[in-house]
Length: 84
Image 1 (cartoon, helix red, strand yellow):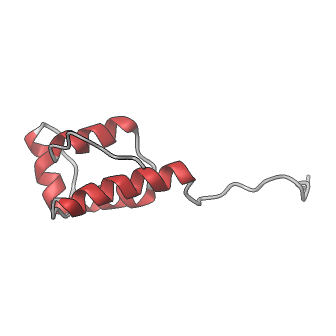
Image 2 (tube, rainbow, N blue to C red):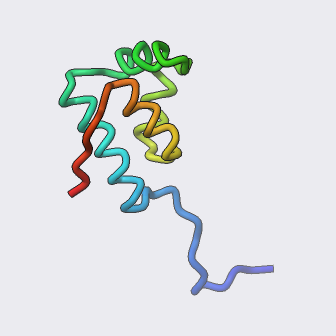
């Protein structure tokens, strides 16, 4: 069985929404002068255990849940977010 040439192939490229989520989270970390180890420690303070390597991978891939974003926001004491 062959695939038709006009079918879209699966892609691992980030969607525009994933890029925006990644950029927003990274920008907030940068504004606060935090790295992934700092985020790991901040998350531990609110009861969430992740290692710095996995945090970096998760954030850089941009494939994370809104719950994860909120956990990070809480951990770094983000109270306002400008999307545009």
